[in-house]
Length: 312
Image 1 (tube, helix red, strand yellow):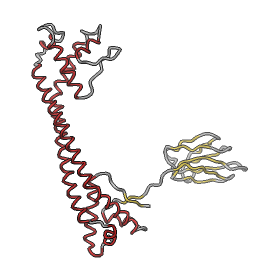
Image 2 (cartoon, rainbow, N blue to C red):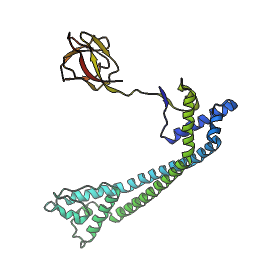
Image 3 (cartoon, rainbow, N blue to C red):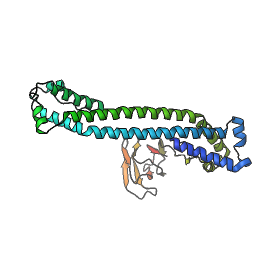
């Protein structure tokens, strides 16, 4: 049996509304919705206007999201060389602190109870580590910092690295602000769209009742009509003595379990011409490729066989 599939995507919902409104207006006085809309007090023209307003909020939200994503990329590009250098500093200091790795804590680097360095995961924590190392380095008398040989040899410009870090932090603030504004616009869109979409679903329900024998007609109004998929269920089946039975629509990946008191044969395929397997009492047989249909045979002259199988 067919049913309407209502999308969770806003753009698809609006597409449905526009198609439905067009069909309604194209049909003019012959539209079957006229009496329903009047009875329900649904103002389709107003709903369309609200939809247009919701589109404006949606457009703003998408634009802000795009700007937020750009700010994220700018943040990452600005901070990437800084963090790369920070990791080099940590690597350089490892041999220096190998007898007491907890010294790293004074440099802003987290270390567990076993002396293993815990890597920073978020942008904020990475910035904290970078700033802490530079600050700790600067607390030493000139030329005495254990990090000085690396900085001198590799000509590290700490001021430049701090400037890049500040730039990255600014992008992070902008990113969060833009993201928050996008969420506000999405909220306004949802609020504006709530009643029109609720009405649209009511119209869909009405049209489904109008075409009980062929719900595909509902698709002419822009609704996504899909055929219902029968849920697979586990069933207990019995077969009388000396009889064969075809079992079709078996859920692949499931198992057939002999729950009776007698062994029986299972033949692969709907015609029972495939491989034969003797399924003993209490045993299971995997219903894998080639077992969507099987033939079972009760070879005993007295008593039923019984088994469980999952099919549609």
